[in-house]
Image 1 (cartoon, rainbow, N blue to C red):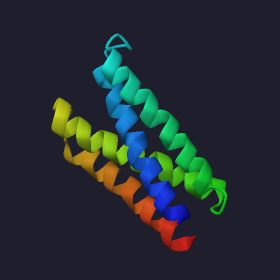
Image 2: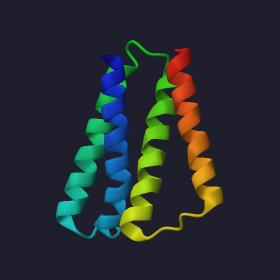
Image 3: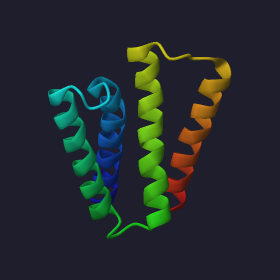
Length: 104
């Protein structure tokens, strides 16, 4: 169950990272509320996950999932650059997440 909590926490972290863009500096109420809800839920789920997982592993995976999701959604939603070098680096983050999961 802690890995499920961690995966959900990472997805919600991605959600609030992207949500920040939609808040337009916290001037839009609905995106702001949704972003804050994602933030709180993400941290709560991370807290549940670290009851059973090493904090370093959980934190690295949590931020890694959020990073991957934010970059991918940034490319799709906001036309962020998708250069070969950037995608290679994203692959390295993914490899790190997989490596931490496999060795934990």
